[in-house]
Amino acid sequence: MAQSRIHRLDDTVVNQIAAGEVIERPANVVKELVENALDAGADRIEVLTGAGGKSLIRVTDNGSGMDAEDLGLAISRHCTSKIERELDAISTLGFRGEALPSIGSVSRLVIRSRPRAGGEAFEIAVDGGAVSGPRPAAGNPGTMVEVTSLFRTVPARLKFLKSDRAEANAITETVKRIAMSRPGVSFTLAGSDRSTLDLPATGTDSQALIARIAQILGRDFRDNAVALAAEKEDVRIAGFAGLPSFNRASASHQFVYVNGRPVRDRQLSGALRGAYSDMLARDRHAVCAIFIDTDPRLVDVNVHPAKAEVRFRDPGLIRALMISAIRRALAEEGIRASTSAAVAMTTAFRPGSVPGGPPQRASSASTPSVNAPLDFTNGLAESGQSGFAGFTPSAAVAEAPPAQEADLGGHPLGAARAQIHENYIVAQTGDSLVIVDQHAAHERLVFEALKNALAARTLPSQMLLVPDIVDLPVEDVERIVAESETLARFGLEIERFGPGAVAVRATPAMLGEVDAQGLLRDLADDLADGNDALRIRDNIEKVASTMACHGSVRSGRRLRAEEMNALLRQMEATPGSGTCNHGRPTFIELKLSDIERLFGRR
Image 1 (tube, helix red, strand yellow):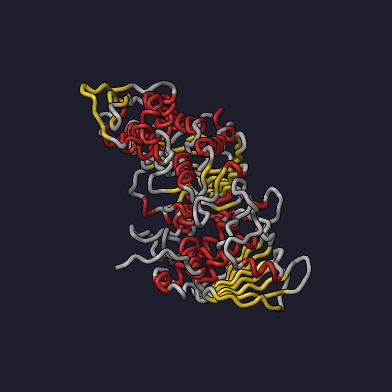
Image 2 (tube, helix red, strand yellow):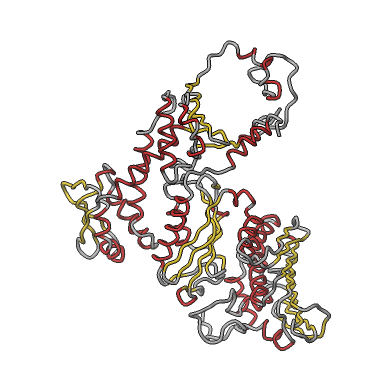
């Protein structure tokens, strides 16, 4: 078969190819159109969808609008009002001039716009790449963009879309992520395929951002988050990070922005994991809203077709500042656990309720059944105690001395009153009841002590009788050898062994018997991803966590009063002691006012 001559592709095919990179699903269309509205200065944006965006997407804004000449250019490739000649200082959300022509090549696109500064409205249409207009139209100041029959010119792409519900959810997530960083803009998302999402503008003052975050992440987040504030050189970090015990099963509740642009960046995700590395289980994820502001010349946003990833000129600075900002904020917050556990406990104790089930009717029998739910309105009365006459209390009672009685308000965790089931310490503060998981709490204390010991000195090494030779690609050898001094501080001693190999002469003694080849290969992968020498640090902290677990006060051990109070005082003095090493709360606090409501006193 003869080879075809080189020829120029048709403009419509070129736009369809570009659409494959920029427009993967309806949510990408919404993202591009909403970003255009924001770049046009809109403070009110309405999004309407149908069939998950497959049949209809309509975005209406009150931005600056366009005249007839601008409309004609807007649907042409590489026509934009946002940059001139350089890409090294991009401050707008859009800049390539690809979105509208790409969308028009795979759907029917209608744009109606009227300049806010004055003038008539015009409309232009693009149907599968064929342009008609602009023509005079009736319209309010601003712009309306309507996309129908998405991907009808590329049916193969349409087959790969998910269900209407899944695509509608993706659009909702996209709007939320954009809206988070724009508290001064009102957003409305509606349609036949969804319930309406209404995000009114929260203003421009200092409380506007947290109010917008609460709209999206809920008021629980506001009650269980710490404020972030850090600055170094030309980088500023602000926002809010959730308490470790306020976590989720996926990373979908992590919102990170760079100069107001929502991003999903592996380096930033890695920094978040690093900040919470010893506070969360590996299958749990922190909740956060973090805003990074820097000189646009220090970050490249032109590295991904959908502009979802960025590259920093100094990624190490960003990572270090992000980790230190989160850890410092959590440490400064002192002893604090999430309110969600207390809310769940209060709900469980409501009269006639069963955790996880519907309200129950009170039993007419005077003696409660073993399996029957206990109605606390009657169960705590004297007549309801007869069913427990044969039980011996399993509580160690701690009598507080008079001097300590007067000092309850001076200690956040109060004074120990009892130990129940040989695992839970009940303490009293001036205005609350505190329940402490003694094993989880002591596990965190021991772990922190081990970490401090590790930070104070170089870790001891275990020499290998015969050096372990690890074969690696040349580029990985270069990365490993460049970090040899850092690795030696962690007890791993290496040296180059020819162009494509590394000799391991000693391994960290704390790790015991080590698969040096596997460790070095994983370390090389981490270094290639820009994660520094984290593999060794993670392994050591994992070992330290295991040691802390086995060296902690065990469940089932009865404690004396002075031991219980000593544990409470240590918790108050140890940052991060509100959660154990696995992200579980170490204590729950019930306010006296909540307890009084349970008993009908309020």
